[in-house]
Image (tube, rainbow, N blue to C red; front, side):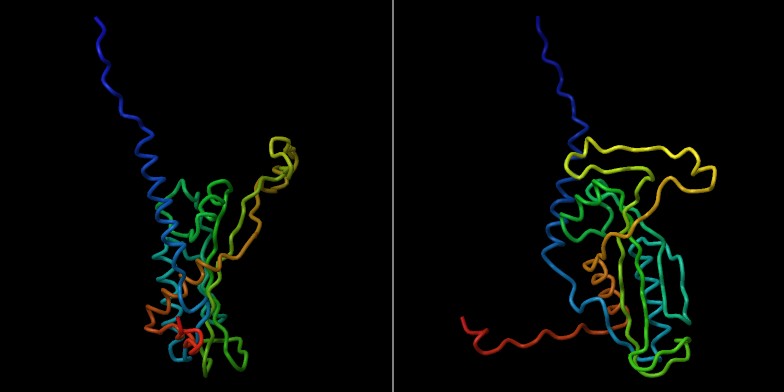
Length: 214
């Protein structure tokens, strides 16, 4: 007599559910963009608050702070790795294209706040007066392996040469190459910093009468 075998639960179902959730999240995030751009102005007496707000915002985004230079007006993070669709708990990606790109490549992001005087330059922002301009930038780095020669037409024909002397000289086998600015993530971080400071985003231009007419 033939017995019906009990159905086995596939281990792929939870993974598929995670991927579907990641795709939905990426599509929803991509539909809305942060308001206000990557730059904003603050009075000099709120400079310290701006540095603190940037530091807290970067930490909330799961970045690790690498450098805080109050005199130079810089807050910078360590490179943060993400694997796109394979790490749906990461929130760096704004578009589905970024999700796929981070999945197929070894990408890292560095977030940075740069504060500069609007008028006269100074080498010590802690003593600056007047308005200051704060700008958030996010640089995407691609980690590459030394000796890897990519064939642009057919990836299967790519070659890799091994340097036996380089490691003995202290040369690393991998290096990080900047490839792009992530303006979307920079805008999101700038918006969160403004919210911490209670700064309203710039108002959108009013519609002209002919544009508003149906």
